[in-house]
Length: 299
Image 1 (cartoon, helix red, strand yellow):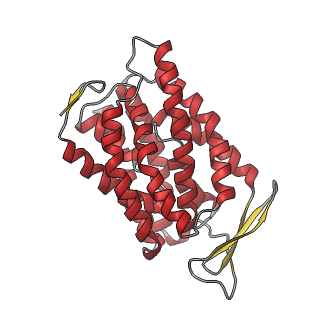
Image 2 (cartoon, one colour):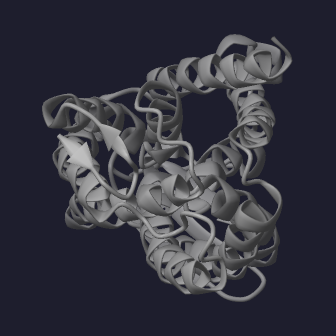
Image 3 (cartoon, one colour):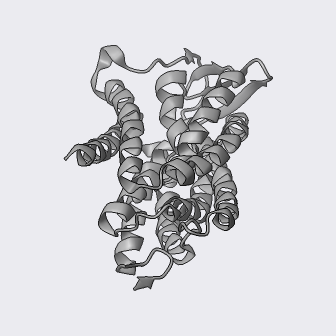
């Protein structure tokens, strides 16, 4: 099958299957899977123009709603966190999209940038999973009388948000989330993943929030910022007519259809999977790609 905007030939069944598998596992940790589909498109399919980032946004728009629906239905959506992620990352996504086109049109430079970002995230997850003494903090205080899957928001203000989950009390400062999400949004805008995909590991490893709770909020944040990202890329296409900027809608929709099914099933089974296994899967995927990209830059 030929995709004219991407200017590639690819088997649609392989595209659908890859998106399904990737999204099934990554959605458990609040990551859409776009960060893994990007190297697949660039290295395996040969889709290296800047529009590949915009196509990743299209994938997010189509695939994410099914996963978000499951988290909302199971009452595991932390709405205050979702709002903070959306408000914080939106400005950064616009800045990142411009940086991607203006300064990172060369796939080689883009790959090493992506590799460094993924290496940092992967190292944080690796320490959390395999080095007990360096594991991320869990800021939850143990409570009694709460169900394993119950999520109850207790307090929402500009200074603090607190909630209970899995028998523990958690709290975080919204201001810190806004600031982190702004800078993450810039990186996410460049990488074509909306920002929420990078913020998920940070929320777990640095802020100390439970992965079973932050997953839905991170996915919702990625969904909203990806809509804005696609719109902005379409706008930039008129300013940079000499560069392929607009997304390949056909390819993005095909990836998205596989992701839609994968995210729904992944979000559905997530509550039955221990957090350490979810983090382990993400650690392996992220470090593998990070090392591959950085090595390709030098050799």
